[in-house]
Image 1 (tube, rainbow, N blue to C red):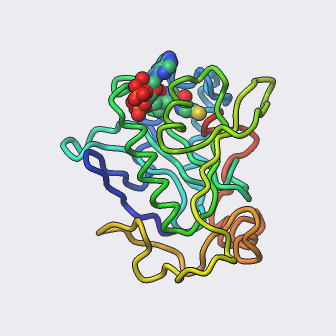
Image 2: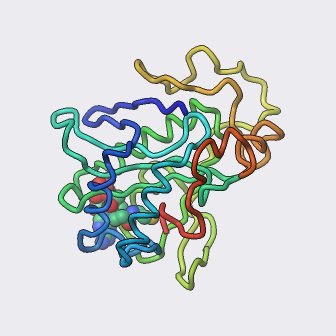
Amino acid sequence: MTLPTLDTERLILRPRVRDDLEACLAMDRAPGVVRWVPGPWHDPIAHRAFVEARLAAVFPDGLGYWTVVERAARDRFLGWVLLIPVDGIGPEIEIGWRLRPEVWGRGVATEAAARLIAHAEALEIDQVIADIHADNAASRRVAAKIGMVEESPVERDGHAGFRYVARLSPRPTAHRPARRALPEGRRDGEKGVPEAPIRTPSGGAAAARLMRPSSSVWFQSAPPARGRRECCR
Ligand SMILES: CC(C)(COP(=O)(O)OP(=O)(O)OC[C@H]1O[C@@H](n2cnc3c(N)ncnc32)[C@H](O)[C@@H]1OP(=O)(O)O)[C@@H](O)C(=O)NCCC(=O)NCCS
């Protein structure tokens, strides 16, 4: 798996690792954090198993979960952001964010998510989605601030929400140079841009190979837990 470390003015986004497990669980248990996100959060065993499965999952190159830390305090876990095939399966690519309540309201989610959008552009992903609970005003605001557009109502597990979409690049028919050596949006220290562009959902065989559950690229270890949305819902 290749997942680059990304940086912003204030933040470092580093690959989320097994050592982040307890911090992730503690964050989820904090009041209000999973209020708008269906999941096994109130069953301690299932909750731990879910996060462990996501930590063990191997996503396509350049996709996964990043732990968010401040440049000034790199040992302090602030939360995570993600860019993964939706529900761990695809073919769409979803973006998501979850932070400890102590850091809410400081623009951290927006700053981190905007960096992931630039990273998605560097990967030549053409569309990123987020399904967000209708009452999750903070998350909807983050999506809007990074340029996502509210496109359609969605309903999951009996909850009403909205699909936000970011369209990132022209379709493959557009005449533009391939971004290989130094993709647009890539910064110093960013590694791991895949050889082949990932396109969704109309990107052809390469993307299909990357996203299919049966692909050896996709499941190099435990498959990601599915059936529950860990991202925006
Ligand atoms: C969603 C979340 C990541 C936002 O993190 P954050 O760092 O506070 O976000 P930002 O500070 O970048 O931006 C939040 C925006 O929402 C606004 N906001 C916050 N609460 C709001 C509310 N109840 N109603 C309306 N707007 C609200 C803020 O004012 C800010 O907008 P502004 O910059 O225009 O003032 C954080 O609240 C969180 O972790 N929530 C729990 C997990 C979750 O729901 N994740 C998303 C699942 S879809």
